[in-house]
Image: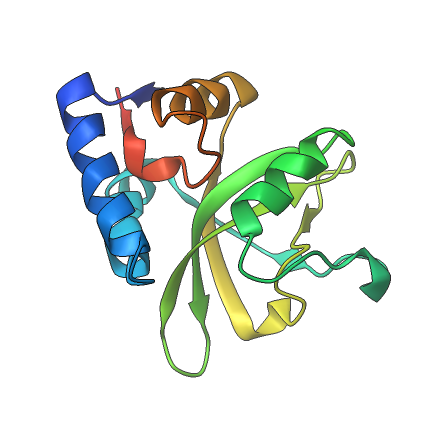
Length: 147
């Protein structure tokens, strides 16, 4: 199975929907819905750890850009859904993998409070989706499919 970028028509429609809801801070459920379509087919459950030092924590609410920035330091990018253990609330989320294969979340420090399901997304797909979204480096998974 291979991750592919959705057709232009589907991509543009999803971008409009997500952007509209994002302006009201209500985009999470839609991002989760679209992400789960791909996660159901090829997602993996991961054990994710907080950064080795609390001082490495990055700004909350910016998981996508945080994870993308960490790619400059040699980390891989992972995107998916984090499910809060107590409430079952699902959040669209991004985190990283270090050079030893450890999954590290620089945004959510209490990683034991979440179950993570995600997909490693190659840099070329992130770049293509970001460019198609007008240079907006935000979520990627809702714009991908599986072939």
